Image (cartoon, rainbow, N blue to C red; front, side):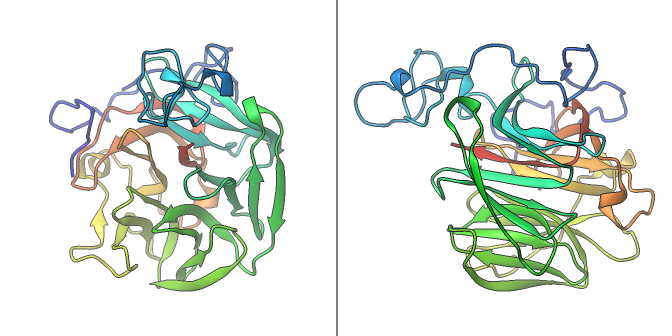
Amino acid sequence: MGLAGLAFGGCRAQVDTPDGGADLAGADGGDDLGIDDDGGFDLASSDLACSGPSVPEICNNGCDDDHNGYADADDPACTPQLLVVPGTTTASAPLQRLFLGSTPHLVTLDGNLMADGYFAEYQRAFAPTAFLTRESSMVLRTLTLAPGGGTGTFTDYAPTYRGRDVCVFNGELLVVERGPPGVLHRFKPDGTTELGVVSLGAVLATSCASDGKLLYVAVHDTIGSPSQFLVFDQTLAPVAGSPVAIPGDLLTNGLDRCLDIAFSQTGVFYGLFVASGGVLNDAALPGASQIYPFAFDGGVGAPIDAGLVRAIGEFIP
């Protein structure tokens, strides 16, 4: 699998440089994702919808072709976007969408303030709500977004385990229980009806994401070995050749732990990779200072400076 749509010069990153990518500079001039640096007004508006049936977004015609509330560069089909939640140094912050285009910046998606430790996912074709889980407490949240980045309404469900991440795959919401043993909990799109579980074995699970064809789950063992990715097909059966190692360029530069992964609507996976120092509990790690576009065949793109990020998630409206 290559990195579709990106020219990375052989799919190898210059990960040994201190500043390998575009700055996500906040208002204070630093690499601070806690600062909302919205470069312009939000284009989400029903009156921008193009007349006629919904079609794939055209990125330069001034209207909302796919009728998802976002037009041109504001649409994640045109500009890569991820959900970002607070880092460990932020007491509370709103759920934000992170633009990864030529001018990376943050825009508030929902005004509810969240404490540290949330992981988020939003795919409108799957459900009309965003889903969040919080590692430090037993919470699974369904969030109905308000138009234009307002403050939406949410309902919290209390499972009997601590969820580490959420993702959508094959018509189900999957919640990662960190473990050990690691477990995937399968939910209906209502976010409360559990369908069953998939055991990941005697591992510590950190994140999950899908390109719509395969499911990838980041795990590491209980002695601090580098993260690997378990791969599952549409039936949630393991795929031959799984697990897959972290790309070699990252390991060479000491980045042995995957904190989180997410898939963008533009067809690229992004990951938070850090040097674990042998720490087993990822909640004790400070977060990632860079976001890497990567592919599971080992390709890695130039990193994007990110200040401090603990979690990223899909944003596909």
